[in-house]
Image (cartoon, rainbow, N blue to C red):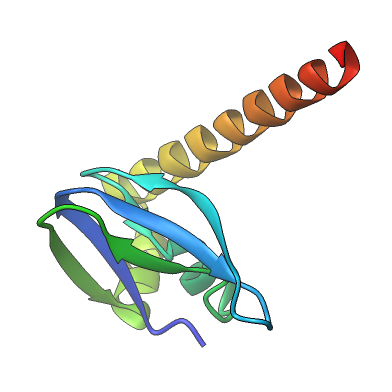
Length: 106
């Protein structure tokens, strides 16, 4: 179960998902300002992926319960998380649309 959120203060991290056979699949890069694993903590589910630092990083850990309490209080953190998640969805849709366009052109 997800037990903490990682806030990237400095550096670059790679997000990967590993399959049963141990094969890793690249999911994306995260830069300073991202809250990694926030979705898993909010949904109270296991982490769907892992992160690996690419450059020298500074990550802040926020305990899951503390993070959820802060979100329930509303305010700036709630808006920030909504903005990050919206950006991630927007980027995903743009990526899928681009892939679909390329596949049709082949």
